[in-house]
Length: 256
Ligand code: SF4
Figure 1 (cartoon, rainbow, N blue to C red):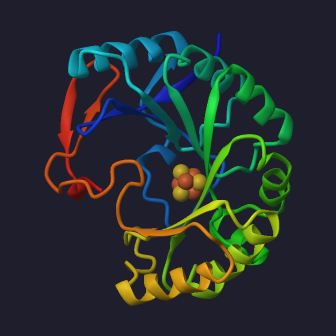
Figure 2 (cartoon, rainbow, N blue to C red):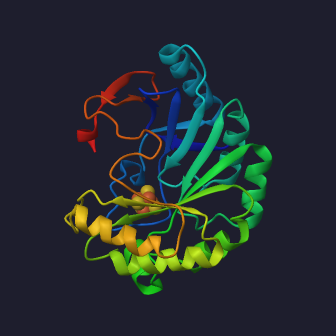
Figure 3 (cartoon, rainbow, N blue to C red):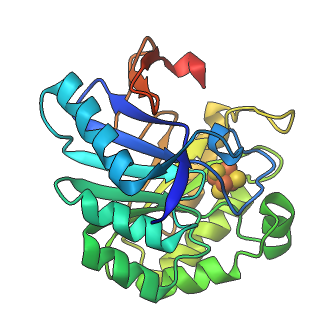
């Protein structure tokens, strides 16, 4: 049986939607704000994790979630675990949020076969040297994977604007790269939340400039300071964090 560490799952207060956070990541992004990169949480089988998702949803929503987003950390690290997890969640619309490094064509085929419906892929940096510096890895395998699977499943690509590191030049290059694959792919530019002493949150003007650059190449570009799935969430107690022992905590945007 396969196991991964789970620090918590998160419930939306808007619709029956659950995020599963899996601990650990292959990348070492210098601006990572995810607590899940640190190896923490409880070791759980897929069986126990799915039970936690179902019980928390039935308790809170009185029904099973309509959408489940598997995030991290990096969900693709343990292939057998992820395939088993997605197959057990097929009562819902299942999405993975990934850096795409391990997601080769065959892996995507297997995920689709067990019920995966959508991939949200981070293209963090276009320049290979800068990507290596920022994440510890080359971005070429991600580009190769993306070209291979982009037609097979609903796909959203995301970049975080990090002033001084991933700025409008980088975002323009990423947009150009995506447009060569398919200009219809949805592209999302999110703002960096200052962390670990690097960079700062971009200004509205910087975000707008990046948007305009990307729009020259792509039909579906969105800039946002909030969660794509939640729209503009109210600042107070927008989510509920459920820990492996079933206890919960209300969470607001400030907790980020
Ligand atoms: S890929 Fe995501 S979780 Fe992993 S280190 Fe980078 S920002 Fe953090």
